[in-house]
Image 1 (cartoon, helix red, strand yellow):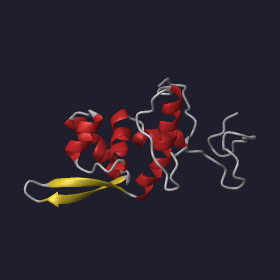
Image 2 (image 1 turned 30 degrees about the horizontal axis):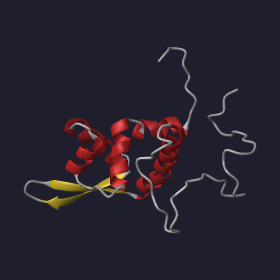
Image 3 (image 1 turned 90 degrees about the vertical axis):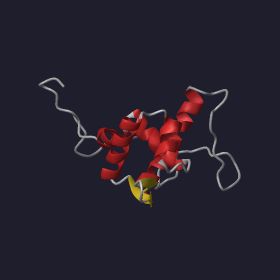
Image 4 (image 1 turned 60 degrees about the vertical axis):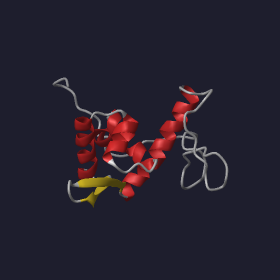
Length: 147
């Protein structure tokens, strides 16, 4: 980082410090798919064992996942999303929507059915007015706003 750098305070940057690495977000994806054990997560992400171990420990330290022992000898654990970890589902479905639209428009690799019976089409909306968040005027406020 340049000596004169003064990075903008930003929750996006702070979040990426925890989940912004490829194997981390793919491990979270696997937990959403119901894969709970290390070997399955490693197989489905392609992450090496040492990298995946480091990423899972970081997620646990951040309170995004928790470990539950399912075998004593040898010690083996399952991984489960915590409530903050489950909130990442909105992030993952939004990333998936973007990838389906811009990278795999002809054949999305995975689609999810919603409980209403239709294919899930995630939309980020304002909790106050219900309009799409991307529409309308945005006026940033807070300590991360720089002149």
